Image (tube, rainbow, N blue to C red; front, top):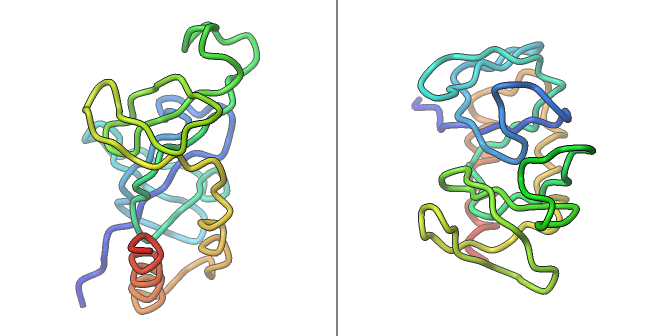
Length: 145
């Protein structure tokens, strides 16, 4: 049985070279660690530091600016968005529901809340391929709404 791809993003404030809000392809998943494809190189991260999903979300991630951070520019305010396609950063407008990426020019909905993805955090520590396929199918149906 072919196992679908899984995707993960960092939960922790800083874990170089991972960018907050960016989604990375999961190469290997164990109960304690996740190996990610980061710029075509494997990077192993403790599993509790990551949010792992059975599908790559197609909406902007909203990220709170780290304290004292000069990048991105202070003019962007207390939060910014990360493109789900290319991981570029962009300023947010409080009233926007979607926006176009200045880097890749693709448009996506803004994920002001990621609570709908948290259901996948309830998966067992070592999900079977069947559970991953079922979760993938549920996520695809959710995205088609």
